[in-house]
Amino acid sequence: MSAEANAAIDAPEKLPLIHLYIDETGSRHLDRPGAQAKHGFDWFAIGGLLIDHEHEEGTKQRLQALLARWPQIRGPLHFTDMRAEKKGFSWLGRIGDEARTRFWSEYKIFLAGAQVAGTACVIDRPGYAARGYGKRVGEEKWLLCRSAFDIILERAAKYAQHRGRRLRVYYERADCGFQ
Image (tube, rainbow, N blue to C red; front, side, top):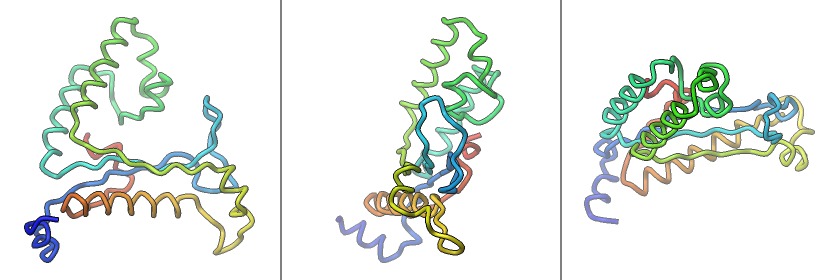
């Protein structure tokens, strides 16, 4: 580690920020599976984006430009809805193939140009149940978010430390942090 990084660790308030925007998907209860997805897997996941504070405004501007080109988008960019062409993205199923191809191309260009890192923890519900976690009751009852949240925060903290940054976490803001 460089002398500058060591000096910054000694004065952590001077470290630059990295923001982690996270959200979850699926039921956090081991005994209550979520809605059945097309792929058939039963999981709980927490995932998100890490973005350096100084890159956030430029990324927001690029997102606003994408949204301006596609005024049909009126809500968060939930990939599951986008891919399934459901809910706020049902319009994707009603536009022609050429327009749909153009949308996905522009979306991929936006993602490829974003100066972010992705992180996630996905927990297989049947695997956890097979390990006996489902037998716990009361205060010992296990919520899948307990493991996933700890894991994603530990990974993000290690990433931030490796890059000589402080970590700021925005929970359940992954879908509104850039809108």
